[in-house]
Amino acid sequence: MKNSKKGMELVQVGILIGIAVFLGLIFKTQIGDFINGVFNSLMGAGF
Image 1 (spheres, rainbow, N blue to C red):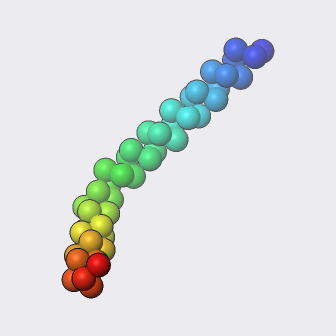
Image 2: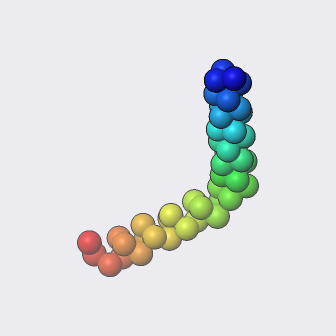
Image 3: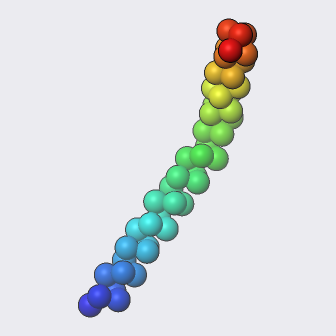
């Protein structure tokens, strides 16, 4: 019973990682543009 429960947890973690990677690939350009905008505004503010 203990081994099957651990296996299910590993499956759930794998699925969550897969979803995170998938979403990251979809929103990669938007995230990159956002981060570039934040850094550009910080550089422009003179920090």
